Length: 112
Image 1 (cartoon, rainbow, N blue to C red):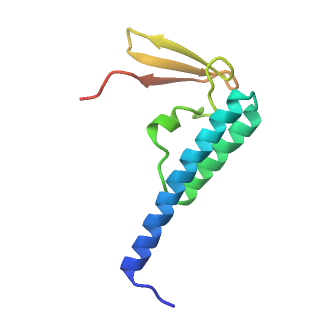
Image 2: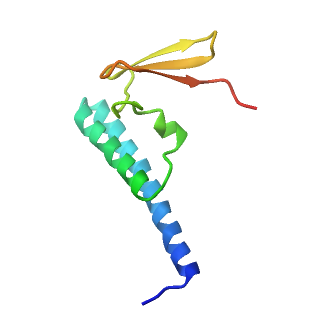
Image 3: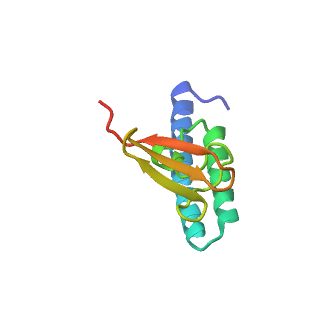
């Protein structure tokens, strides 16, 4: 059963939409798990969200990308798995992962 190109594009678009929704849900669940001090479960949810993103070629939104470590993929929960500092001179928020020790810088100045 051969489908037309327009039908295939529609199916791919629907798959990507569902993948984005699932990524969003997994990060919500990761936050709930982290609040209950279940960080292994939160890390697993991040891992699953990343796998969905890679499988369906969907980007993880910027606000969600900043919730996990770029190096060890740990869910970052300030005070428990992350240390947050604001550098007003460089206008960045410094987030240190307490699992691997890496520091990530996120600018907070609005881009033009």
